[in-house]
Image (cartoon, rainbow, N blue to C red):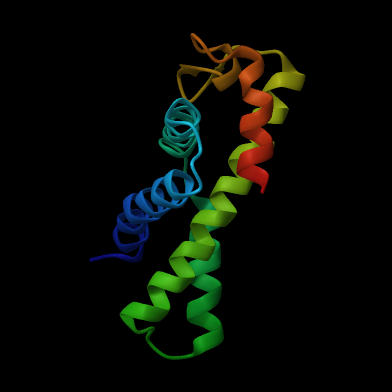
Length: 126
């Protein structure tokens, strides 16, 4: 399995953990669902350069093969980098006023989102 495949395999578990934590904190289901939709719309289809750079940097710093646990921890940090980048892209899309990213309408222009995208940016940045 390549680093890219291992990296991509971490996201579903990270999303499940986020959903569990938000549910335990009694976040309304509609808010949880909306945030999960935001993550899905804004994390899929990208090149993942930032996240993979974190993984590559970890390999270089370790100067030895990473254990599965080390790779998973590094992968989580990498996905957090991708999520933060997604938040900045949403801001940039709002400011630019164009219509599409990766062939899809910008998140803030999708049906039912519009200005709800601003709290999404804050949640992703946190």
